[in-house]
Amino acid sequence: MPFWDEIPTPVEALTGSLRDYRDLRGADLLRRVEHFFRWQDLRRQHHLWPYSRATEEAPKAVCAAQEDTGESFAGVNFGSQDYLSLASHPAIKEAAKTAIDEYGVHSAGSAAFIGNTRYSLALERSIADFLGMEHAVLYPTGWAAGFGAIKGLVRPDDHVVMDGLCHSCLQEGAFAATRNVHLHGHLNIASARRHLARIRGRDAENAILVVTESLFSMDSDTPDIAALQDLCREFKATLLVDCAHDLGNLGEDGRGHIGLQRMIGVVDIVMGSFSKTFGSNGGFVATNSPAVREYLKYYSAPQTFSNALSPVQAAIVLKAFEIVASAEGRALRAELMNNVNDLRGKLQAAGFEVIGDPSAIVPVMMCEEGLARLVASRLPELGVVANLVEYPAVAKGSARFRFQVMAKHSKANVDDVVERLHTAYEAAQLAYQRYSRLIARPGIIGAIGR
Ligand SMILES: Cc1ncc(COP(=O)(O)O)c(C=O)c1O
Image (cartoon, rainbow, N blue to C red; front, side):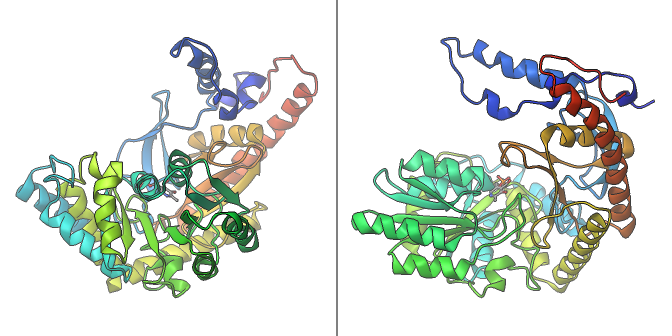
């Protein structure tokens, strides 16, 4: 019998948000985080904490995994980010083994000292060429690249104008660099223009960095990159575009929306991550300016003061770029897009709200956190590995499943996930109706889901 038929769910596990525990007060730095832990643990005990999971094998289309509680489950996997299914590609594994035989497993130094390897230098060249840029600088993670590029280049009197939905690495970098951070409406060029005009109207002295993503990671939508670059020219600002989620896997040639919008080699600064499409941790910043490249090497802390990518990681990504640029890469992108369209169509036919444009990210809206948690709690038992996204990754009240599609998902995998999500949703909705009645009478701890 599934757990939800026998264990009552306390209302507190269905309400609340990480938002409630963000502000910390009190002199005891260790004890003041305990109330978060109590809430989180309540959710965990009731199978309502679908985070911090582990895979028990390679993150393929069907995969065995482990809950945060240690319980095992297995099923179709729409929760891993390996869009072209390169993480288990034989040529990539072979490249990793060759690099290990040649170099051992470690770069043993920051890139500013002697952490570069033959592979990392070749990778910098490959990325720059792929993007039609002159130079690229590698970072240990994509997060470090976003944070490091902004913090490395922006000074306290400068301004950052960024899309309100930009990724954590971009927002954290901006707020660490300056108090002058201006969030503009999502994809809203007119809003970006208003900010730029206002800033330039009173400050001609300091720099402005405009920041956006080529594919937004929670909404699967895309700004007009050319319009943003034009605005930057008009207001003497600089554009940075994060292409973490579409580079390599979208567009016939794999150059993502930057390529689709004919902006190859034209965007001022491009940054990206290897962890979605290229089979490894790591990230990069690409620029046409040798001065920017050299400056980042010594003034961007995660570049200068963090150990360089290992030779294994660099060799993996180098081989991944080779595949991405080949006929095989083209075929993998076509398989991926077939799966994406199939999944989006079937989810919509089953009555789900799927937002954004077709990409490897397929966001399925649940909205209310309580309902979303109840749906998520049923998925492992039904054989689905999927990520529920709540605050802080998205705004409160807009919880969603973020399915991440791979080239090697089969049609049967797509059918299975849609059918199982539907089953979970129906059951959760019934339980949630009872819960809704309970929260209408505050203070009552209800036994729902039975
Ligand atoms: C838009 C965006 N930028 C940067 C990152 C960070 O990349 P990584 O996971 O490789 O550190 C992510 C990953 O979640 C992302 O979604």
